[in-house]
Length: 105
Image 1 (cartoon, rainbow, N blue to C red):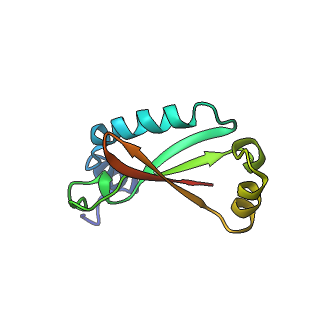
Image 2: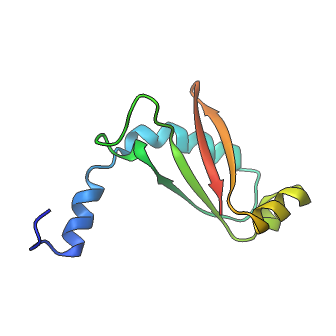
């Protein structure tokens, strides 16, 4: 990137590389999976699947699930405790016969 670009221009350029449409089926399935959970504030995509430049045949869609409180999100006390002591809790899920993962923070 040119040094004359503003930070806003650099961010806009980087965001234009993201392949958000390819992640939509995973987001739909993750939303359905989390529908019965409480306290979900946001779902953020990250990782190599966002860009065609970094995506490979072994790339797995990655998501952060931001929650208000672990006690609202997790149904089991053990998961609440583990997430509080050693975050994030990492879970895998299947979407259209492909695996993805999400981290609870």
